Image 1 (cartoon, rainbow, N blue to C red):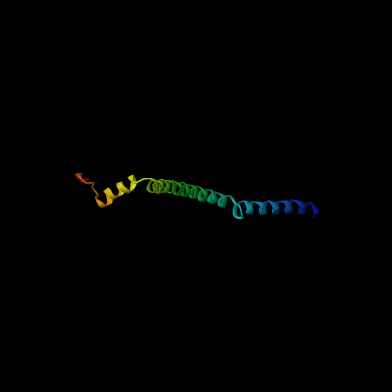
Image 2: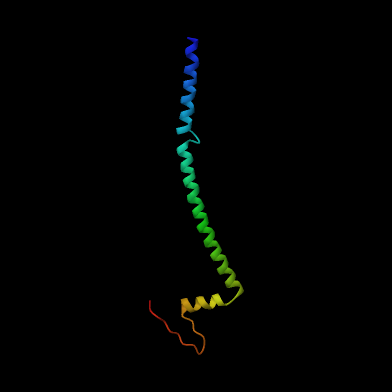
Length: 91
């Protein structure tokens, strides 16, 4: 009787460990899902950082010089300087 208890106990512990490995907290599927989520978040962060960098450059241009303001006025409002001719080419 005593000889059967040890293997049964070891088998039960092995089953518990396998359950934890496949279905418990920190299981293989959960880790794979977390890795995918992390990769997606890193890509979103990279896109946001690039957008922030562009906006920072644009803000600096607007603060430091009038070239950006003039370019925007030309594009959006059709501004022309005195003695200048506006020629628009259709796309």
